[in-house]
Amino acid sequence: MPQASQMEALSNQANAGAGHASRPELATWHGGRLRHGGHVGLVLPCYNEEGNVDELYERLVKVFEGLPDYTFEMLFIDNASTDGTAAKIRAIVARDPRVKLIVNARNFGHIRSPFHALMESAGDCVIAMCTDLQDPPELIPQFIAAWEQGASVAVGQKKTSAESALFWMIRSLYYRIARSMAEVPLLEHVTGFGLYDRRVVEIMRRFEDPYPYVRGLICEIGLPISVVQYDQPLRKRGITKNNFFTLFDMAMLGITSHSKAPLRFATLAGFLLSGLSLLAAVLFLVLKLCFWYVLPAGYAPAVISIFFLASVQIFLIGLVGEYVGAVLAQVRHRPMVVEASRGQMPTPAVPETAPSGDARHGKS
Image 1 (spheres, rainbow, N blue to C red):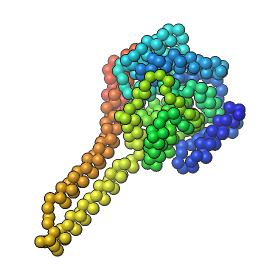
Image 2: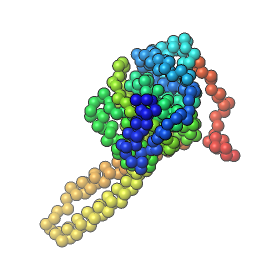
Image 3: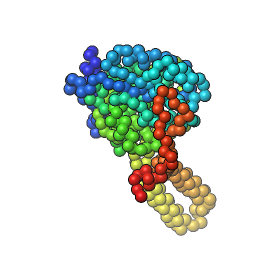
């Protein structure tokens, strides 16, 4: 199947999967190229991936050998690895001027570090992918074909995964819940692996979000998105850096960044539970008055009510706390990451004094 026809089939398949009311705008092809050739930036976040960086580099070089109209550069961002990852990348940097490196001063997490590299990347478009080899570099020609035909974003969507069936089921359930509550239509089983047009990168920069949910931002922006489906393989080397806490962090970020539904649910639940508690209190009072000597007051009703209402309050306070934490992250104005060193990249300009919040926004 020709490249353009294949991309058109993928786009039509994605559109057929759900109505336009429940998905972001997907790119629709009408033949011909809107773009051709250019410079591609590759963003490659890594943490303790010394066993994978060499193979990833070789596979990426091989992919671009089949794309003679495109030049490329690789930007590795090492999140303060504790193994030999940075040393291996420095060896690649020494022999290939197309490879650049940022080493963070400490581990800034799985969200801030990749986004910082995305903002530092060059190119007419930028392709972001993990260095664990679970994001196949061989999909890059399909991303570029979609970009040539007008897509502002081309993302890889996992059709299947070699992970456990239970994990896949939990992920699918989460995506359905998040999409049902979100104020913008979200894509399922998308991790951020994909191509972003330079215009999209600059729009995301203007959001000034210190803790961004990128897969939600691309839907928030609303420019045409192309979906390329793939089967995600298992890791060949190393261990996953995701655990319950990182996955829970990402899940809560996806919901709180794009939905006020939990807050509204908390408000409604508060009214409902208050009404039920009042009704139960009145009912118990009436019963006690009618059956004064038969119905003992006891401590059980009071204890049950107190514990029930306390548990509900703790849950709702925690829910509100998630939103308060998101607001706190916005107003602190901390840097996305702090770099320890760079390789084959210009050193960023550092202001003599840190701008205040008023100065940042042009206020006097």
